[in-house]
Image (cartoon, rainbow, N blue to C red; front, side, top):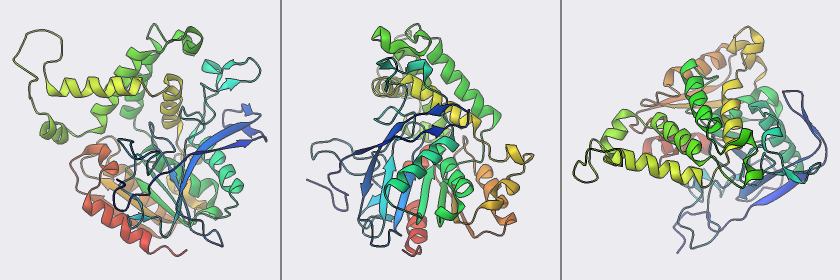
Length: 374
C-alpha cells in the first residue's frame, strides 16, 4: 500500500536536445539528452517550479516509486510529496540526472554515433557549470521562464549556488544545503584516492571496460567504502556499529566487525549500480568547482550578480562540508546585501544528515518553503 503523503507511482522522461552544448573545457557536444522526473502540477503561469540538483551518487529519481512493489522510494522522498516540507500540492518539482550520469542521461556509457560503441574514456569532462547550463535547456524545453527555487545538497548545493550566478534572473530562491563554495585540499585528496582505486583496477582498461564486458568492481567498492567513511561522523559510526563483532574473533582478514560488514555491503551495492567513468567525472566536477577563482578568490565578487533569496543550511557533525564552509557562503551573500537565512542544525549523522528525516531540519525547510509565493 502507498504510504500517506507519498507522491505515489512516478515515471521518468527523456528529452533530446539537437542543438550543441559547449562545455567549460571547450569541447562541444553536438547533441545530448537528459532523463528527468516531475512531481506535482505546473501552475497556469508556470511560477511554481522547483528544480532538485542531485549529489555525487544521486539521480533523477528523487521521490515516489516506479511500482508498488519497489522496496525503496526516491532518494529524497522524506522531503518531497503532498504536505511534506517540499509540498507537491504547492510546487512542481523537477528531478533530473546530470549530464555525464549513468542513470539514463547522456554520459560515458551512452553510444557514440560516430563509432556505434559506448563513449567510455572519450566522453568529455563535465563541470558544475555545464550541468547548470544543460539544466537551463531543460527548463526552456518545459516552458519555464523562472524557478520558484533551486534546491541542492552537497554537490547539489554547488549547483544551486551556480544557478544564482549563471542565471540570476531565472532563480527567485536558492536552498544550499550541506555544501561549500569549493573543496578543501583534504576533500580533493579523498576524491583522488577514490579515483586511483578505480583507475588502477585491472578491469578499468583505461576507461574502456565496456568493450571488455567487465566492470572495475574492486575499485568502485573501495571508492564507495572510502566515501561512506567521510559521509558519516565518528559519533554516528560509533552509535550504529561501535566495536561490535559479527561473531567471535577469528584472527584473520575476513569480516570481523559490524563496521566492516556495512562498508563491504555498501561497496558491493554501489559497484553493481554505478558507472566508474561517471564516478570519475562527478568527483572531478567537485574538484574543479570554484566560482571565486576568476575573481581573485573573492567569493563576494563572484556572487555580486546573484539576485535570489537564500536559505543556507549546515550540520554540526558534517566534517566533510563543515558549517564554516556554509558560513563563507553566507558572508559573501551578506556582503552583497542579499536576503539570507542561515541554519546550523545540531545533528549526529555527519554529511549524510541532509538526507535524513530530522524533524528540526525539515521544520526549517518547511517554514522557508511555505513563505515562497507562487
